[in-house]
Amino acid sequence: MKKTKLTKLVLTTLISFSLFNCEKNSEDVFESNQNAAAKSAHVCIEKWNTGDNNSKAASLKAKQWQTGQTIRVKFLNGNNFVQSKVRQYAVEWENHANIKLEWVGSNSSANIKIGFREGQFANDGGSWSYLGTDSNNQAHSMHFGWFNNNTSDTEFRRTTIHEFGHALGLIHEHQNPVAGINWDKEAVYAYYAGPPNNWSRDQVDNNLFRRYDANISNYSVYDPKSIMHYPIPAEHTTDGVAVGSNTQLSATDKSFIASIYPGTTTGGGNCDGVAAYNNSTSYSVGDKVTYQGNLYQRTANGWNNLGACDSVPSTDICDGVSAYNGSTSYSVGDKVTYQGNLYQRTANGWNNLGACGS
Image 1 (cartoon, rainbow, N blue to C red):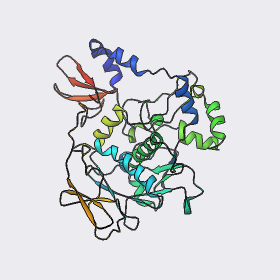
Image 2: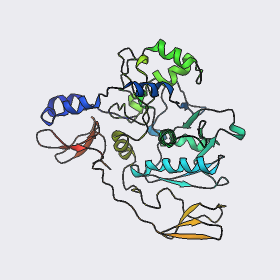
Image 3: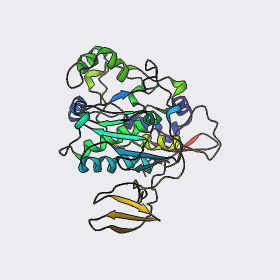
Image 4: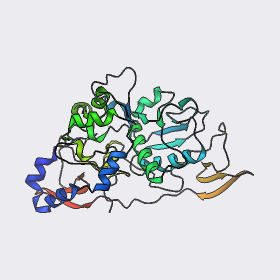
C-alpha cells in the first residue's frame, strides 16, 4: 500500500514544526501484553486470481473499484449474529472512502460473496479476501473462518475491517515497498510452520517477506499502526521491534483510503451501509432498507419507518485530504497528510496543522 518520498523533505523543511517529536512518538514501545497478542493473533492469508503471477504483486491500481461505486455484498451462509457483526464493522470504510456497500440477499448477484466456517466451507478455518475487483471473478470471495457466537467485538472489528480493506484493494502493510522490517527469517519460518498455520517456507515468503513493486502499487509512508499490518512479535525481528495486534483504522489508513477513493463519503448517517429496498429480495424480521429517503426495518407485520436518512458531518481534519506523494508538485495552500498529521504548504515549507482525527 502507499508511496512517499517525504522523508528527505521532512529533515530539511519541517524541523521547525517539531516533526522529530512526532516521529519519536510514533515509535511505539511494545509492552509484554502487546507482544503476547502479536504471538496469538490470527492472521489472514493472501488470495489471488488463478491467472495472476503471485511471484510479484498483482497490480493494486488495476484492482481498485470505481470512485463512488456501489459494491454489492452478500452472505453465502452464517447465522444472523455473525452476519450482523460483519455488517456493523465493514461499513467503517464508508466513513473515509467514497464507496458504498450495498447488502443484498443470498440469491442476489453480488461483487463480494462472504462465507463462514460451516456447511460446504466447514474445513476452511482461515480468514481471507480476494483483492479488490478480483472479487467479481469468485463465487466465494471472502471468508471468516474463526467467527462464531463467542467471538469478541474486538476480534470482529479487527478481522472484518482488515478483510474489507483487502476487498477495497489494500495490500498487507508489512509488504509495503518501503516497510523495511528487519525480519529474523528463520524464526519466522519456524513459527509459521507450526499450528494453526502450518505454512511452508514458500507460503511464509509470499505472505510476509515478499514486498510489492513500487511502480504498480499505491502506497504512502510505512504505517505500523495500520489495520492491514500483521502482528509481529519482537522475536521475529533482528532488532526486537514488534508490531501489536492492530484492531482499528489508523489515521494513515483513513487518509490513504480517502486519497484513492476521494470525494463525498457517507459520514456515518443512520442509513449508512443499508441497501435500498429491492422487491426481488426476501427480507427477514430485523432487516433494514432505505426507500425514498427513509430508513425502514422489517417487522413481523410489515415495515417500520425509522425516520429520514441523515448524515453526521465529519470532525476529522484529515478527511478527504490525500497522503503526501513525492511525484506531485504542491502549491502554497495545498494540504497533505503524513504520519498521521495534516500539513499545509507555505512559502517556506510545510506547516503542521495537527493530528488527524481531531
